[in-house]
Image (cartoon, rainbow, N blue to C red; front, side, top):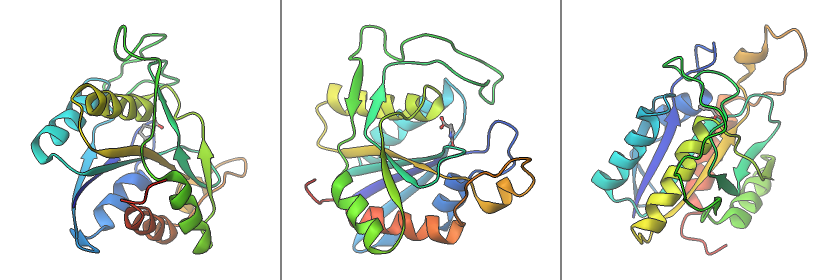
Length: 203
Ligand code: PCA
């Protein structure tokens, strides 16, 4: 089984992104699976293009895309990708896209096909708190998530796929003027292993 795992480069004034550090820390092989690990640019053109190129060149059996959602308290298992670009801040190319579809005329939304129930239960069993989320936002993470699901459905691929948002790392929040929740990289890396181990489960 081949699994594509992606993270994002830093954006929005941060110098680090937990999803990048997490991807870099994961092994190349785990539980008999080959893990293809890649970092995506926070760029409304290059980010989705790179995801599509990776899908086409590696033809993975499963994809878990990771990104940072600053302020989230738990590992957030995203349920749905929306056909909407409405950036709260500029991407790393300096572009803000407002109130546009990702795929004009495309479906309003796609559901994750990852085994989210099994993933949440497995995380909780290891005392890592995890929630379901009904919004991956309207920025790059949602754009890459929607692009990924749209390609799988349009090409009729048999690929399990979805998106997971991560909390900030403690070092990202230390200088904040108000309290911001965080989760250590060590726990986030453990969570990623648990999520990968659940691939192939049916729910
Ligand atoms: N988080 C952003 C984009 C890159 C990332 O790590 C988002 O939630 O859209």
